[in-house]
Length: 170
Image (cartoon, rainbow, N blue to C red; front, side, top):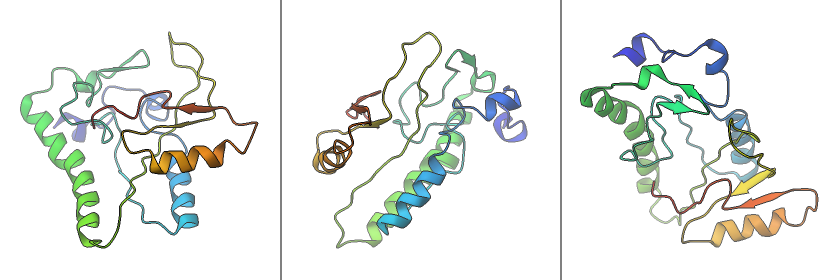
């Protein structure tokens, strides 16, 4: 498949090292948080441009063709078989690792935390003022605890369900 034999997806090296290809600084943050909380950590080991593990795999933007004004040429005109292969080899592998871990911890009440970085200013969009965004869906138990702790610091601008809503499927 073209994304394996030509892993740049048609992008320049500078673009592959930018926010469009991965969440800058999040691996390091996740490792520190996992250690400090004595909590397990499951990391994806692929670019979200191959397939975004934090969107529903049926979301039409799970394989981005354009991000922040950059065309992802390696994602154009994919055959159905290529999409299925990406889902199987990347998306499903990541989600299967989470499911397998949770099945082994039967007496555990899980709390899944997904970490992302976000760019303060995307092309053609307004400036994002938040230092941190806390997203949640219907269950606010963890997000309320995190928000309560963060609000103790007056110099942190908190996006509550910003820059995205936590209620998006996937």
